[in-house]
Image 1 (cartoon, rainbow, N blue to C red):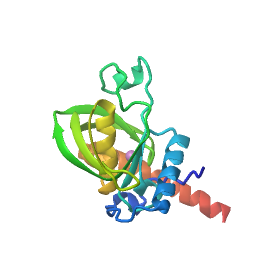
Image 2: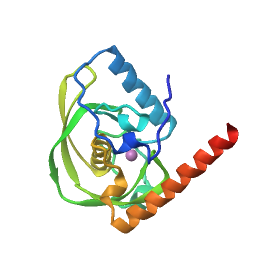
Image 3: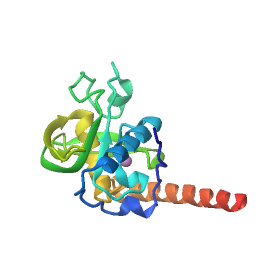
Image 4: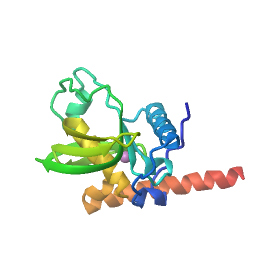
Length: 193
Ligand code: CO
């Protein structure tokens, strides 16, 4: 098990589009395992390769089912019903949104933005086409938190962090908060050195 470092914005790699994966080898498979370990260790429900500093179109998602999840309701979702995608690890290579329908709003968080949660409007229902670690093609239709998560993670692969989907006012507040956090980190590192 290898837990990788999760990078925080404004690391440039988070604003950069990741490249298509063309080689499906043991190295790719071991990288996706490290990504899953990293996501579980950080208690996240999704992770894109950009967030660990790798510009490859790879994402992992694993949404645990929580009965009567009040937190999700407060954040904008209907009471949860157990769906086939709950409690299942998805590894998506070269994911592409094929279809999107409807609108939904959910208070999203992101491992690259600790302690930041805010509402983002996204499509309610999506169809995603992706390859697994062996290169085999799959298609998945999703709604609820899974649809939101797929869109959030594909955005990462396109170099789009979630505040870019918010109002300019909210985006600026988050940008300032993260800049301040980064400068405090740099100061601490300088004191140590
Ligand atoms: Co994120």
